[in-house]
Length: 299
Image (cartoon, rainbow, N blue to C red):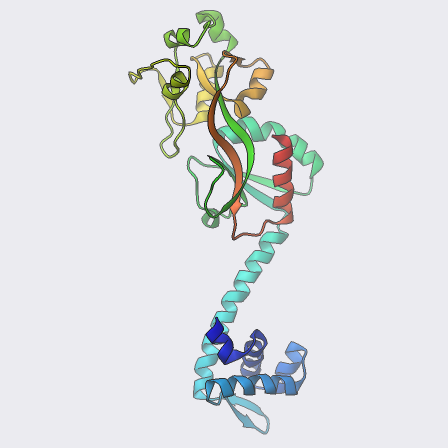
């Protein structure tokens, strides 16, 4: 970029050249840019001196590009058009009244949806578009504003705000416990039907991790109900299919409502968390800032 300054001196010189070339007139370029005609002439003269070549042929009724000027104008107009499109896309994003939140199906269904009425009441002019996904997708490709992701808090290239610590404990439906009994301790849980989460694209703690944290050796024989989406795991637990490993921030409302029962008093602290993230290279729109603040307050 330092070398570019050597040749064009300032962005204004490029704009002056582009306008004069497009309009074939220094006077019309001055009117278009709201500057004086001598200012346009001086800017172009500086560029010509730096390049060591004439870009225009001066005539009585305006100016005409030289062959070199034609080539330069083609490149300049192409580059400025790209800058314009980029600026327009940013402006449109910042002025948009909707925010796209990317998250898992379980987070959307059990955390986000029960709280949507509160957000709509507080911010009726902002539309939330919840995009569920089974993997961590690329922001730019999907036009995502914010995303909820699991991790340690270190997301290279992203800002991150914690929503919840990762805390796990077994949960089951009252119906299941009525039929199979409530396990008195972690060891007794080995004799119950366990519902397993086997996500194909995200690393998640399983029953082996939970039992290990309790000091119990667990051998996974490959049996039991196995599902690839956590929302299905919770639905299966509600339906009485067995005991599920419950993430506190997902199941806390279900436990409070009596839909599920928390089986152990001591949660398994995984050492990870769930965060709202967005790229450091992006500027959050005012609507995204509002949603981010609301997410933090609702957690």
